[in-house]
Image 1 (cartoon, rainbow, N blue to C red):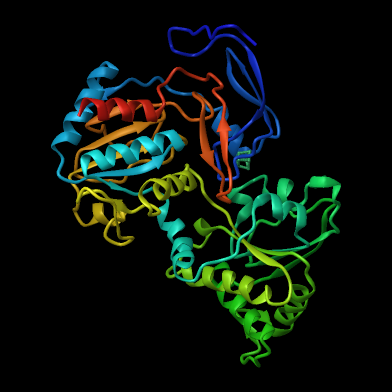
Image 2: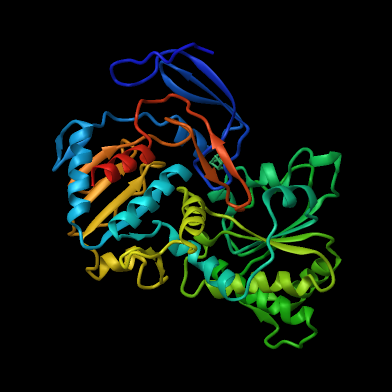
Amino acid sequence: MPSSNARKATGERTESEQFENVACPFCGMICDDLTVERTDKGLKVLKNACGKSIAGFERKLPPSRPQVGGKDVELAKAIKEAAKLIGKAELPLYGGLATDVEGMRAVMALAERSGGIVDHALSEAQYRNFKILQTTGWTTSTLTETRNRADLIIIAGSDVHKLHPRFFEKIVSPSDSMFDVTAPKRTVVFIGKGLDKSAAKGSRIGEVITLACKPEQAGEVVGALRARLSGFRLKPLEIDGVALADIDALAELCKQAKYGVVVWAPPSLDFSHAELAVEQFTGLVKDLNQTTRFAGLALGGAEGSITAGAVSTWQSGYPLRVSYASGAPDYDPYRYAIGRMLREGEGDLLVWIASISPDLSPPATQIPTIVLGTPGLVLAKAPAVLIPVGTPGVDHAGRLVRVDNVVSLPLKDLGRAELPPAADVLAAIEAAL
Ligand code: SF4
């Protein structure tokens, strides 16, 4: 370990260092078993990589400086200008929110101080879950429980491998399980055609079954499965190309399972009223728990969205779409959805935080925008204020809440570049108000 972090004038650290057990911030799984090396060429993932983690850790940062009105300024001036804009805004909107626990706590404090509204860029997908959790409740598993105990895994209408390239390797077909328990081979069922099944292989996988409906019909197929499990006759004898005989065969597998898990990823369920599909998935879990053990597992959670929802809930009592305009937290999932507010001309300042990937661009808007972003963030035009910030787990230490909501994982400072954490910038803006 080097005793100090020597840095070039560009801010990059020059000494080589190898990091073990690195937690990856680039999808909601936050795998914490990576080995990453830093050399003068940048970061390289040496062990347990996937395409997303390589793209994230090994991305070369373009030069980036704080700016006001498109012109380079010192950080202190950009902070002062941001505080001025927030201070005079009637209704600032705090969006994006791709940051870590500390960054999100700082967002909540600043929103409360300035009477603003808080919503994550990907909350539309999260609300497919929240609506069902809030209205009917659910029974869910964790990544670890699923890895150790599941004997039947049903992937419902979701392209899990695309969103989480190591889900099958780590959870569905791991080489070992906790407590030396070697579970029997699992049956994996895909409900939806065109889902990437290429990773459903390995020593732990038994049969792989596909019910080839359109992925957006997965909720309807699961509804038919629930009806058959309850003993109802059904006509027609197929649902979107899935024969009733295949649904009956899955019903038998569900009844025989000792620990079945229904897996879905809300970002994949991108169609109207997708919460009704989620309701069917969680309803199947409830039905089957009368006679055996079943659980749901919701995935997704990129760009720190699980962290944003968790911190918002701890701090305000509500899972995002919270307004502090009255001085107290007020929750309304329709009125305080920032995407809708911007389309309908509400709010007079957008504060956009995107510290993880360069793809989380702020939406087009006429109102002034303050951006706290990772260098390389795609911007259609120069914002009123731009402050480059570090990526948690790459440029500075931090914590992120994992997709199953049961742990927050520590992230290491890998020393890619000397950029301030969003939390520090937000705290400095608040102090300058
Ligand atoms: S699956 Fe997700 S968390 Fe795991 S290494 Fe890949 S991008 Fe990172």
